Amino acid sequence: MPIRLSAVTDAYARLAEACPGLTVRELEHGEPAPRGGGWVSAAALAEGGADLDAFLAWDDAQVVRDYGQPARPDVVASFGLHRYAWPACLLITTPWFLHRRVPRLPVTHVSYDRTGGGMRMAVRAPDSFACLPGDPAAALPGARVVPDEETLRAEVRAAVAEHHEPVLAGFGPRTRRRGRALWGMVTDEIVEGLWYVAELLGEGDRARHELELLLPGATRPYVGSAAFRELTGPDGEPLPTRDRASCCMFYTVRPEDTCATCPRTCDADRLAKLTAAAAS
Image (cartoon, rainbow, N blue to C red; front, side, top):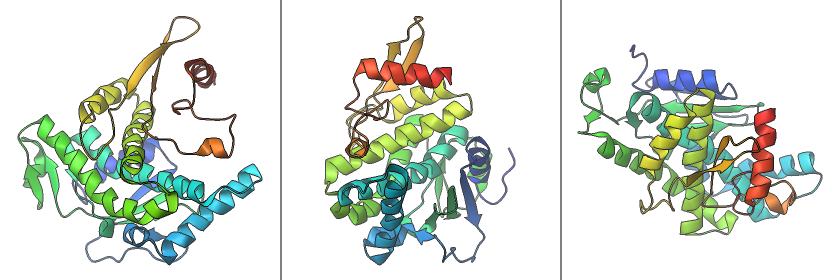
C-alpha cells in the first residue's frame, strides 16, 4: 500500500471518494491552517467564545431558511455539535476501519469549513499514530506499534475522546447538556458516521461488526454500546437499525419527521422509514 503524505493519506482519499461532500486536506509541514471565509479551528470552537458564536450563527440561519422557523438556542448548538463531531470522528475511525491505523489529532490539528456547500477539513499530519505489527507504516516517524486488535480499539476510543473532550467543553453550556448526554452524542457520531461511510463502500456488515467490538458498552466516557439490531421488513428481509444513545433535538423543529434511529421513533415508524429508504 503506497504511503504518501502520512499514514492516513490513503484513508482520507478513499473517504472523499465514497463521500464527495466531505473532503480532507492534509497540511504540509509548516503550512499554516486555513483562515478566513468559513474556516474555524477545532481549538477555537473549544474555547467557546466569538468563533463558536459565528459557527452557530450558520446553524441558526440554516434552520430558519430550511424550516421557516427559528430553533431554540440549545437546539441550534446541538445541531452545530453534531455537524462538527460527525466528520471529526471519521478523521480517526476511517483510517482505523480501512487500514488499522489510529491517528492522534488534538484540537490544534484540525480546522473545519461547512459554508461552501459541503464539509471541508484541514488536518495537520498526526504527530503519532497507532498501528499493528507488520504494517508498513510502522517504519514512519511517530508510529506506535500495539500488539493486537483490542489494544488498537482502545487507541480509537482514546483518540476520539482526546479530540472531543475540549470540544464538548466549548459546546456544552450552549447545548444545556452535561457529561453523559454530551458523550452520548459522540458515541452516536462514532457509530453512525462510520456506518454511513462503510455502507457507501459496500462494507456495512463489517462496519456493524467492528463497531460492536469497538463500543461493546461500559467503555467510558462513551455511553452504551453500538446498539445495532434488526427489524423484519414487509417481505421478510432484515433491516438493520440501532438505538441512539442521544437525541439531536430535531423533533423540536419537525416533530413528525424524526430520524430512523431516534429514541423517539417507534419500530413501526422505523420500518416505514427504512422501507422507504430502501425503495429509493
